[in-house]
Image (cartoon, rainbow, N blue to C red; front, side):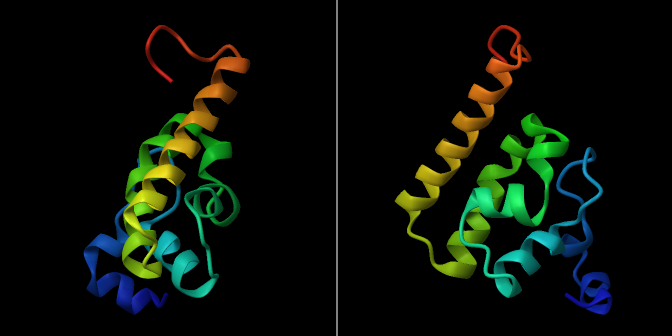
Length: 105
């Protein structure tokens, strides 16, 4: 994604979480040009968000799912399954590491 295009479209240049050094354009680029196919593919392989802050990455899963639905025409039920799976995996991982406190993941 060209820097010029990112400057023209403010939403592409916006960060999706203040905890990550990545901008939304990187997720869009991963889906459009690196053939990212799943929520996990974007948030683990293309943008290592899960490894930097798994809880923040889980909070982005729904947005990434919507991106996949729009760009890759992933059916709604599949997007929902991927988002639920990603969030559940993050929760299990945080639980195993003793990072879950009360009702928060």
